[in-house]
Length: 195
Ligand SMILES: [Ca+2]
Ligand SMILES: [Ca+2]
Image (cartoon, rainbow, N blue to C red; front, side):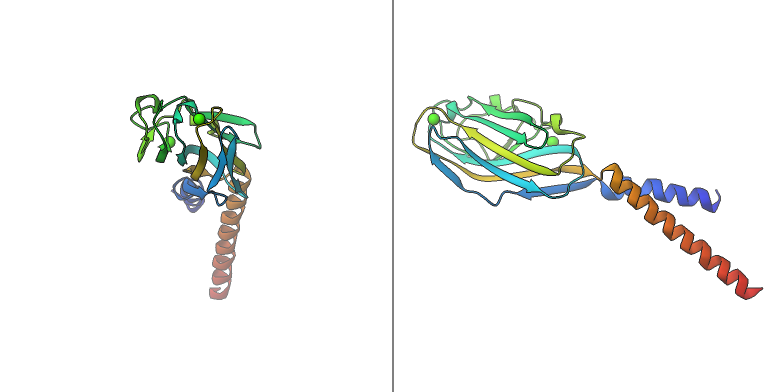
């Protein structure tokens, strides 16, 4: 394999390993509390993210008679909404340290209140966000139309895997080419000095 081929392998192979990065973003506006039936929401603003490969949602929420809750995650920038839990848990209360994850062993329909700590597959598929850009505003919304007292989003977090957008890849490639050019110039100088 010649040097050019080696350099190409390095440029192509390194980013895939180095940049399929796990991410964690935590809402800072929690707790959000209101009397039912007022809808409550919590948002996370991500200034610069990559292409989503896996999205999971971590939630703690409190309410009596949780069975009338509809909990959704919306990417405001694209308008994509995924339902996490809809009318689950009956007369039970609360959802504590619950992770919604397409890869979880059990669906939310198999859980019972109080939910968690546990992982559940959501009602919809979080893979709806795959290959979309992580950048933007993400809103967790709790609709609870029957008044059983206050309800509260106690914590909200997004976790998953993202890779850089094509623009970032192009910049990385240019950077790697620049390094290669520098090495070639240094070798040429060394050769000239010897001559
Ligand atoms: Ca997942
Ligand atoms: Ca209620």
